[in-house]
Image 1 (cartoon, one colour):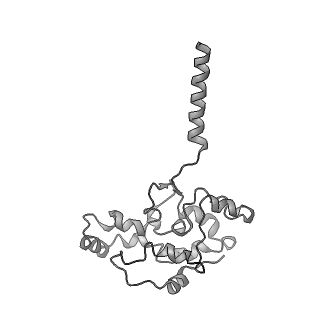
Image 2 (tube, rainbow, N blue to C red; image 1 turned 60 degrees about the vertical axis):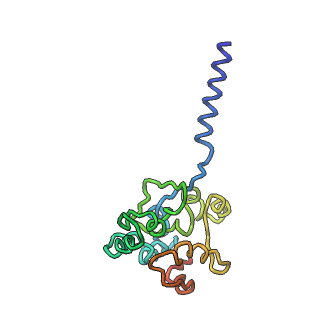
Length: 184
């Protein structure tokens, strides 16, 4: 009987360890633009990082750290500064509008709206997406490839670029896409 109890307890412990280490988490994990920079700064990565760095997306969080942003937040009824207001952060920082999101230690909210805002949380696909033979695997692991042609890019963009924003002045997809497009 004692031996059975030891075997049973060992089996339960083993299954518990497996459940926590082998089953992938349901929550998306964001790795941050610095993780993307490694491969996407140079020619092989299409110099995509260098293009992003020059966009308003890259400075989206910084815009929340201004007196003007604090006034907008206050006028909208928020008691906290814009850089601490969830409603503002949800569009000015990657992943802040995703329920249950996790953030890698390399992730920095100061990077504003980064790669993973459009391409999905990178933890599951970052080591696969640059290998053509593993593209389907990367997509299954969360990689998004929004396209203008099928409307998926605009659908993603208007999650933030819409009339709910207190600074919304309309959204012209063709004009905005020209500023951020980064074909490899």
